[in-house]
Image 1 (cartoon, rainbow, N blue to C red):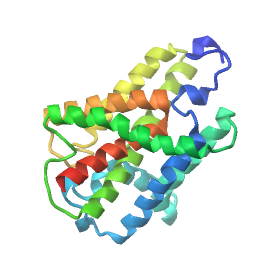
Image 2: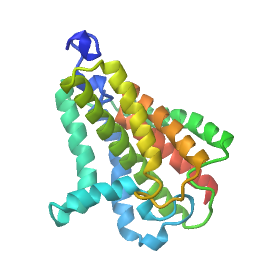
Image 3: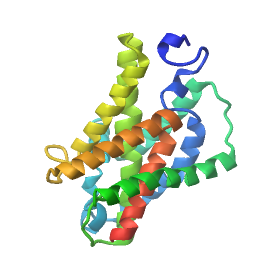
Image 4: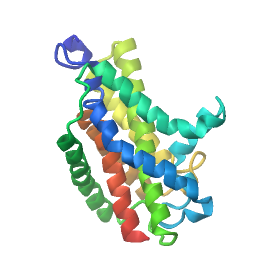
Length: 247
């Protein structure tokens, strides 16, 4: 790959777009995906309260499911299938060996927790978290926390940033660095905005919007540098700690 495309010569495009080690990212995320998909089946919307409010607060998941339901009744499972398919496709495109290093996968869990610490510290500075309200069941809120981390990162980092880079750098031949910077910033602003009307249901508050935008930039940088798996794991780790402290 030519240096003009934003990477060293011969570097796979998938690695440049936050998709390094996609197979290990899939193995890392698969237990969390299965947990969310199976556990959410036993809950009614009224069971989701407290730190992350109701299940429809995972707006990204609901948007994905609504889109896929246009293609038939199996659409409710397609967001999870999309994660698996995208990461398997990225693995094929990366030309990396089809092998999983168990130690590397286990280290991803520790890495996600470490990367979540700065976001938690900033949230304390802002006196913010996912929500300051208590209530609801701990288990249902933990399930929701996992789903939000996985599917918001899928939409706003994996899909949105990659689409912007593909259009800007590959099709329009714009500098890949500045296209990537724009992608990270745009995805962060949209990530923060989607929690509020008309897409989300949370009333707009400037401090919370700024915090989420900063968190989105941070997660975008992690995505570009370490991949979707680590970004999603960091988001999940942050959400789980917030839920544990507020429920």
